[in-house]
Length: 91
Image 1 (cartoon, rainbow, N blue to C red):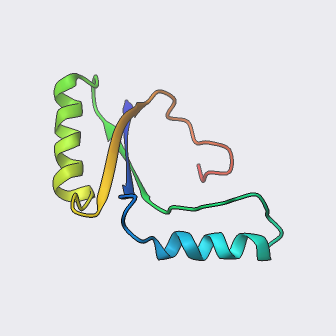
Image 2 (tube, helix red, strand yellow):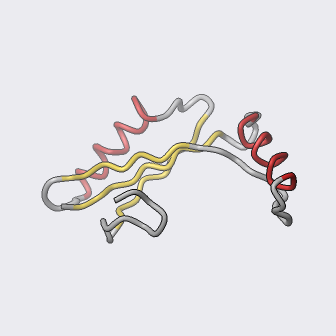
């Protein structure tokens, strides 16, 4: 089974109050060196079968019509090779 990931981020010209709140909280928690934070969304789609150009085109259509708001957000679609959970992620 393959995993296709859609990352959705606010467009650069759109204000990101959640990102600003995280940026303000980091120094108070002892973290330094971060100059900007943008908060977005990540969708992981498990795909049955092989990921073809047609499947990726379908996922892009999903991202454009449901997973993002194209007026204020950009999105990127990519295939994730390893579907095992990352360190620190719930299994």
